[in-house]
Length: 140
View 1 (cartoon, rainbow, N blue to C red):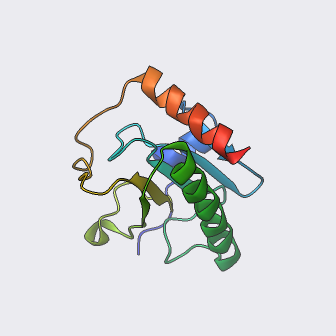
View 2 (cartoon, rainbow, N blue to C red; view 1 turned 120 degrees about the horizontal axis):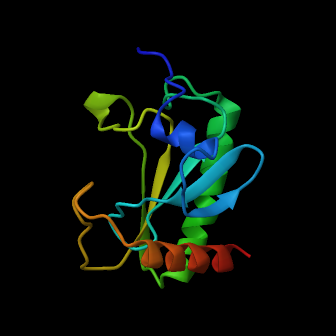
């Protein structure tokens, strides 16, 4: 398996080198909106520790990321009046992973509404900022 690349886009976001629409942060995890959301409120949760994916992450870091994913899912249900939530996690290119820093997708869902195709639509900054505020308020 290839090694972790500290110059991946999510590592740059974690270091503050690239902007993001942060919704949650603690000492071990960081959550922000996907700028190409498959549905409103689509959030990514990452460990702060360098990990390529589930195959090399420290088990304690993985457990913490999943605890945060649960918090985000609960907040997303409330913030977006969702009827359900999709949680996704991909590993290596053959498994659908595109950015090689472990991340979990939390996507609020509504019955009968299909997800947008991956990377098919870039949301506007004002909408992303408003969605981030809704999630932060639901987390408070």
